[in-house]
Length: 459
Image 1: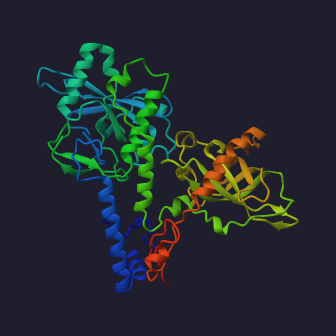
Image 2: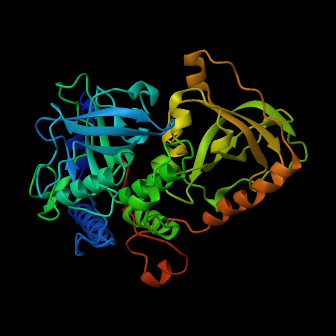
Image 3: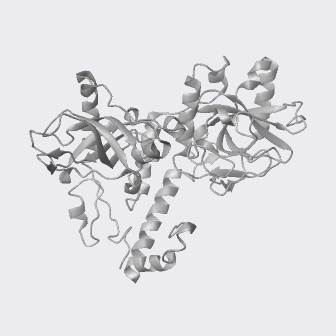
């Protein structure tokens, strides 16, 4: 378990070890850090349910039944389903059967993959390098994958593929595996760059993998639910080949499980680190402008990403801070926005619908908005009609977006969404001193202890 994490690119700055010593210089601070780390690790183990059976649906780690291509296997992107999903064909290089046991001899397996899980030839995420799904066609790849059919052991999966071929030759196109990580290669013989790619951990012997008698698992909390969501989305795609996907692909996603993961991620974040990405909206500190002269519409104004709200694993709504001029004085106001308001300028903007990726609170880019006044005197008086990354727009020499048309119906639709965000911020995570009694802690909901020096360098 890491005590400190830092980037190598920062090596020309202050020694990270010395910085760490400054943050935790006393015995008491080090003991508090140890206590916090122990609590975090225990919470992770409990929520991952590592004590459960590997075959149990409640077991959270994701099994990589294909943990990289075995020797003399190859994988090629053979089909594009839409801008998000594609199909990879796994086979032997010279066309021999993948398996010759128990009278079965499947020559290929198909793997479903999502563009978010692809890494380019340099080892960077495809969504960060704006790689399109079309550009992946016929590309050689290496990958890890989990089973999405009703069988978990390698031989059983081969048997399912064999049965599909016997039932109908076209059924072999049904993906029985789902990619966890896909690494694009320069050519068939090249080695993929995996420096930034998540790696699985060997935990147990069963159920094994295609080239090993042990089983490796991804421990990323929430990964299973994210993959389940993608399976549901794939099955819902309408323009794919008409095959009996639902009959042979296991789809067991539930909104309840997604909510549990979201709450679990918040529990794991015992030091409030997520605020670096999602920000914080303290309702007690919101300045409410009672000015009657707030502009009704503003076609362009700079903004600060204040808070990104998650009702599920992706942040699709948020709050920005703007400062319109009223009587030559800047008035601080808040404005609500959502993913559909984003002015899309690059491939990533279409592929990724998570605002935490597109515009984290910690981003150094400049953002601008067009806004419409909907409720003067309210905590969030403005509604965004368009939001865009001004830094990126200037870099790409894109035209400035026009304000979107607005209607009373659209305003009424967003009103409950704004109230939902405001209500969610009533339960705050506060920094409390260790000396505060448990009785005092219980007065307000969701208070947790965070070291007062967390995230701060001591001068």
